[in-house]
Image (cartoon, rainbow, N blue to C red; front, side, top):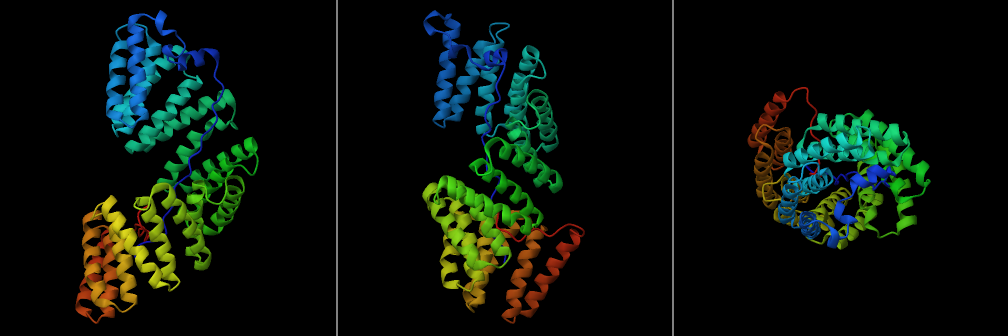
Length: 427
């Protein structure tokens, strides 16, 4: 079947702020934050009002309106030469608004302009500069410019290590960002090293049984799972889950990625009876937090369905597959990779039950969706063709099966030397 348990991404962490020097504290604050508006010049009051309006729009999720306010504030600030503090404050807020609007090129440009001012005023080794570099690196990653992101994160790390040491919790966003990029590039050894360094930092700072430590254990386990090192991931995830239960309670949403990852390990190990209760708890929490029709809920529904299916509990698996399919059609679109995986999973279940007339049109649609989602020559299409061919042979449609097998072989020849994609539902 196409489809596997949902892979859970890194859990985010919030690093405490590294203390800033007095000059950095002043540079990082907007003038209006401490200045009495009644004594401020009219231009400053206008700028403060525009920034406040932008902050209000941003907090309400109206990022277009926020961007317009911050653009107006920036234009006003630039009317006064040497008004670096207002200019950099406007640029930073504007970059955040652009990022929320997926205007990544504009966001990167705004961050670069702000960095030029910070470096000129505070010097290239300021922690404020490091913070700006971290934000710029994050935007580069969103743009797919991972080489730029890596070098920018590394420069930020150099500044922080010089100022605060190599064990500073302020390194959190840099190490985490690097680990995510390295993992996505298949540079697992480097991803492991980044995660291990971060785990050691937080264990030293907070102790062995803190929720942030559980986060880092999950993150390192996620790298091991990407490598197929389930035996190394499992004890980390069990420890993370024990910490989360003890410190946050059994129903806290913090646990969902850990539950999903540990469920994946047990599924891979064919320990279905251990995987099922974890995923059922994940489903209950996800439905409560994200809603019953959210794509996150569909992810867990599909994972749980696969476990039930593997256990032979097809009566329980079928409605779960159908629910996931319905949600994904509504939220991801009828021709999405998620829908293709759900269709193939459902067709496989129906075929296993001997319900061939029901399975055939679903296999047809699954193949059509996979081709639209990935392109006719993608390896995912080869997997779908092979799955459909196996069904056709089971129903004595040998000639059709042979044609599909030949088509799959032709695709595989095009990708000779490349690894076959994991048969997994989209993350």
